[in-house]
Image (tube, helix red, strand yellow):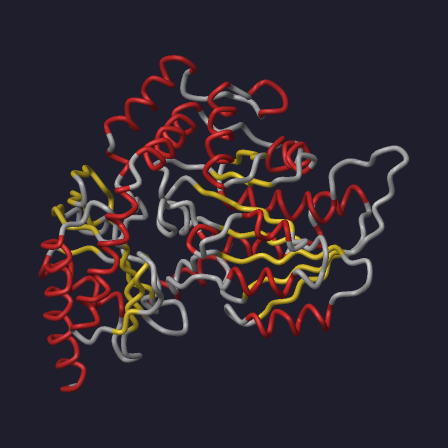
Length: 426
């Protein structure tokens, strides 16, 4: 533990530790927080929540979670394969399948487990089956800026549980340049071998850049490799893009059938922590045989199934989105307004979605900027200081008013004027 102690002490001394805040109460986007270090409390206006549609505090969603507790209790206390499957799971799977236009869906406790399950199941299958021999290698291509859950799954893809116990063929993993379809095509041409099983995986909306994967062009490239699999992580796309919030396929005016017709097999990962006011994740597919394989993956059979209140909250949230598409329209309207206001005031906001990263000059510490913004204006944004280009990560949601967004921009201008002047003077 000496190495750990020394490392963390140096980490803190270097100012790399995040500021810690404890939430005591939420009222819309107003949040009462406590500074963990000082114990000081204040009410701030939040622009850092992933509750993009504001459904976390919906009366209907909260009531659904409460009703589920009274009917099923707080936990299923087992995995779905053994004794943990409840009717709410079946209903949620059906709702997601309808929402994503893919008929077969499997639930997971979170996105990390879902992504690991897909890679494990696709690359290594499950248990040995008499008379079946798995001999084909797998090539995985991953966007270089993919989310950590994807990175974690693919970098260990050659040593997942199926590999350990099933002696399955090797997995080769290659990265392609961010949203660069030409580089994807080059990497496929260079690294794909005859007989390879091909999996391309990408975020739909990138969580730190707020941009959108070039889905139609990716499908076109992959159509040259029949039966290749395209896995889209729609964590930040569901509820946020597309006319009715269905995600990246709807954003581009197509459905998963568009990929299927071109010989590409679509997989979609949905998560419930952003648009669906809950926790958990799901994988949807049109291949019926893939779902039972996911159901016995280590990340399904090795843990409990999604608890009843979480399942019910996600289920009601998706029903709310399908019944009231105007909340998606409101989110997209707010996104356009806030991005326009930031541009008018010469902030470099990259991307195009409700995830709004504002790049800062390299000599400006995002943590100091965010602290000053909170102290002087009562505005809470997320500073990102541990990647190449320092930034503030702002998230717009459907509950923000124009007055609230104006106050954010005004506060950022005032903070910029103060910090930039201080930096120049120094």
